[in-house]
Image (cartoon, rainbow, N blue to C red; front, top):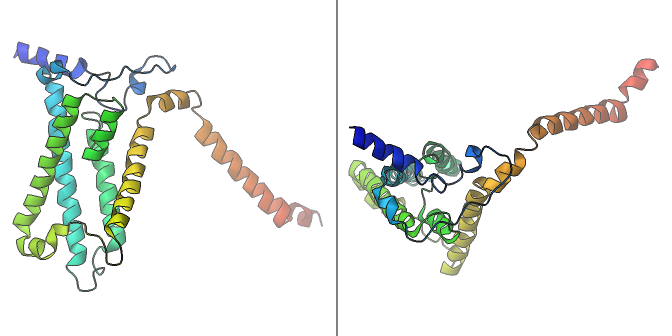
Length: 241
């Protein structure tokens, strides 16, 4: 047991500068930003680290749960003749956004909370993680997605097959080029948001102005109240009269 505990400790700390993504600034003692080193393409030492496999398992479970809930939500809409008498389009949006929010919160400290091969690929290009870890993440994400869809099919086989498994298709009136453009723009927004949210430099910069989001809104609210009561309603002048 002692050897295993040492292995877990080593795996949790040896690669902490690059994994999980987005937590580097929070662990720095100084508020001054320091550019982290680029991750090597190949890092054989990761294969001996428990944190490497734990991160892959976290990606598998997160993608599994995301596909399971999202597919059931989509099929809950299309099973009705009116297509919107159950959860509705807004329900799908809330289901997708809420699941991503919860799953990223749960896995960010373990794997970085990618839950999407496109996110992993973007972070790989930015040298935020090694090629070894990126391939492992993508494999686990795909396996999680397959298992999530498989469980839905097992529970709702007739509904699943009748609705194409809730898969995306290009809507009538649009070309494949339109669909491709929409996917490019949507994925750009997603991955750009990930980069911005996990930017250690931004976190270090913002740490120098800790009260800005309290003072600013209160000053703005006070100015709005003064403008409305004094300029628009002229209440102080009415009181004098």
